[in-house]
Length: 220
Image (tube, rainbow, N blue to C red):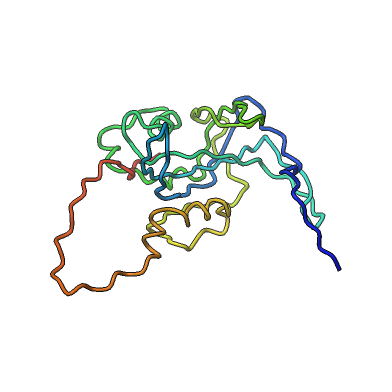
């Protein structure tokens, strides 16, 4: 018996690009991806990221699974954001456009991001080329139209926090997100062995002033 494998060069049947247009969408998931080191123009910095996932009810993914069972489900897309509520932060700008109102000072003191799950909006998709390939990317967000009131997600929803959930990932959270989480600084710290106690008095813990505001608790 032989078992021959070869490099297919990534030549898998690609899905059709999501059309360039404004699409109705429903948030189906929020995932805390943890803190990762990014490099930009030769400079590295640590950024705490989240991923927001949406399904597009009118853009369908139609086909058959490996067992020959037919499926007809909404396409899903998402976008990563750095956790920050600074006035110039992308996350804050997107949430304000989604809500169609700016955050007040009191609202900025706390925001439960889990309230986004199940909420509708409108997403603008554009096509971008990179290394000879064309990708469909989310370019902007708008509030939902009145006609979208009461719309419910077809997909299983999820909300994941490293601090609260650890390695207890929601069943519907994609595998690639779990892999990103496991590579985060938070997971590396959690899984590192505790240092052996030293025979010297412990130093007082350092006080770190955290300026990045990742909390939020306003009714959506």
